Image 1: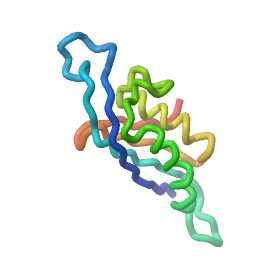
Image 2 (image 1 turned 90 degrees about the horizontal axis):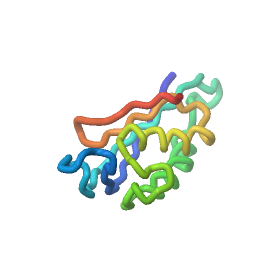
Image 3 (image 1 turned 120 degrees about the horizontal axis):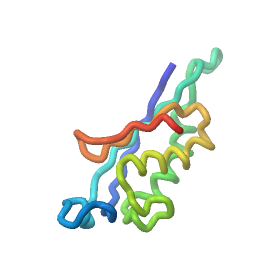
Length: 118
C-alpha cells in the first residue's frame, strides 16, 4: 500500500550555473508543492501504513527551514534546481521515515521532479 501527504512552501532561489541571460539566473520565487509517499504494509490493528500526523511531525520542521528563505543560502542547496531540492528533502526526511518511497516536488503547476532515492 502506498500513501502520501502533501506539503507546500514558498521560497526564492537563483541558479548560479546557468548562462548569463537565462531567466533563472536572477533571484525569483516559487510556491512549491511537495508530495511525500510512504510504502508499506497495513498495520493489522490500526489499519494504516503510517499515521499522517507522525509524518507531518517529521516533515513540517524541515519544510519550515526552507519556507520563505533564499534557498541558495542553505547548506547543500547552493545550486537549488528542482532536482537538487528533491534530493535535499529526501536526505533530510528518509533517516526519520524509512518507509518513504518517493518525493514528488512541483516547482510550478506543470514542472517538477520525482526522486526515489539513490
